[in-house]
Image 1 (spheres, rainbow, N blue to C red):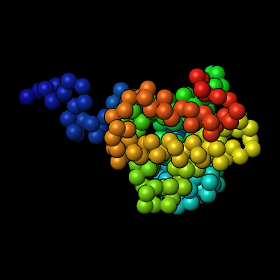
Image 2: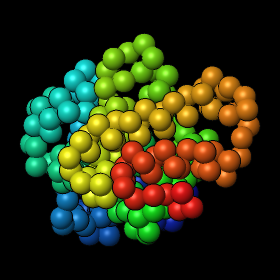
Image 3: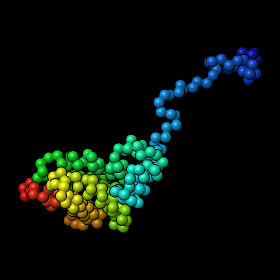
Image 4: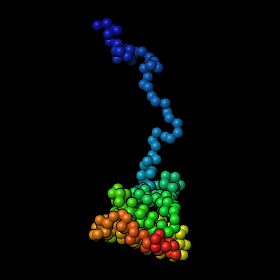
Length: 234
């Protein structure tokens, strides 16, 4: 066999030829150019996951009010500024931690938009729309069920719904005076409806239509949130 027969299609040659022949640029392995910007070992996702894990523990142990961004950052081993960078506010972090389908920064302005005498309808209508979606309802029902036996879950649910969602609405429409009490009353009403309709499934509430529930509940929600502003048709 001729020497040329020992040369492969790439012109590499025999092992002895490769040892003797200097390596040319064409023989060198092709490498991708180094990318500028973020390092190749980008650990942003790991840090984000660590923050979420720390937040779940903090919210579970200390409730929404007691869990501080600084403490969560310390538990995750990151700077508090990084928590704000990834999640913005503590409310947003709570939403992502609990996988709740409600962001107060978005929902509150939407509920406040519109005629004041229809506020009760918009509040109960919004919550019914959330509870009617199986995927969106799941985290709320988890918290509601947990709240039956675990004080931390009850605290999180109470503080998030009453303080972050309903108190700003009550204060904006009916004034800041006793807004917290009025928001708590609305929260108790809404959670009660959810518990009896979706968990305990008491009839005829469990099978009542969306419109039927709105018609019965909206006037009471209206009275709590906006005293002095009668519900439409009231």
